[in-house]
Image (cartoon, rainbow, N blue to C red):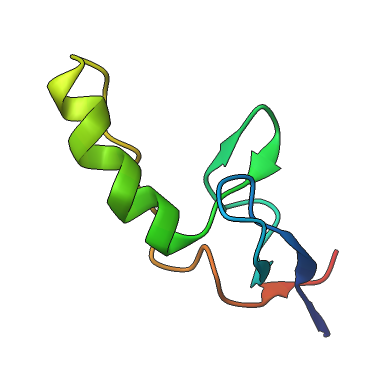
Amino acid sequence: MGYMFVVSACFGCRRIITYNPRLVPSLNNEPICLDCVDKANPIRKRNGLPEIVVHPMAYEPAEAY
């Protein structure tokens, strides 16, 4: 059995992040980092939008398929 993760830029801040492609939160099919989620959630809440929920394993390696 092997493990994998994806490396790409965060949609919000453009920093390079690693993540589990099946669990990472995304906007417009682009991953967002935990820092950007933390910044976005108060704004989303004020605007009546649901907060982004981050899976505990979103930024950890995934089992390869």
